[in-house]
Every structure is written in C-alpha cells, then in structure tokens.
Picture 1 (cartoon, helix red, strand yellow):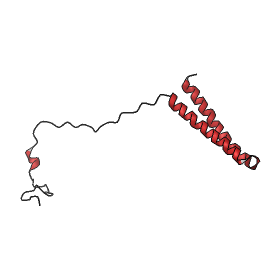
Picture 2 (spheres, one colour):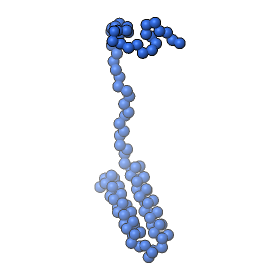
Picture 3 (cartoon, helix red, strand yellow):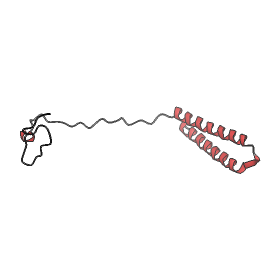
Length: 104
C-alpha cells in the first residue's frame, strides 16, 4: 500500500475509535468513573490530532492556484476624438471644468 492509502486507513480507524468512545460515554453512564471516560476521550482526541498532523506532514500540499492580478487593458496610441473633451448638447457639466467655472 502507498503511504497515502496507509494514512487514510489509519484515519478511518481513528474516526471509528472516536465514534465508539462516544457511544461508550453514553452507555457507561454511572457505571464508569467520569474521570476515566474523560481521559479516554482526551486520548482519542489527541490521537486524532496526531494523525491529522502526520497526514499533513506526509502528504504533499495541494498546489495553490497563483493569484491573478488585474486584467490588463491595452490603450491604443491613436489620439482620442477631441469631441470627447468638449461639452456637447446632451452632456451634463458636473462640477469643475465646465465653461465659465473655476476652482473655489
């Protein structure tokens, strides 16, 4: 078996153990000392965390997609139409730059 398969099998076993300990907690009730059940729960939680760390260290990280920058827009070298910069009949002057206006 490959390392990935072995780690997956271990993870499944640990998950089964965690579920079984959960059922044991419910069924044991007053028959087992609460401290002992908490100790077993803590041990299974620690084992689960250890397996997760082992998997993270052993398996190669997934390649991250490189962040893309803003899309570049090509601006042509040809001169703009001068009519864009003059007030036309249907344009609204909104502030400075209109005819007869100046900065305060």
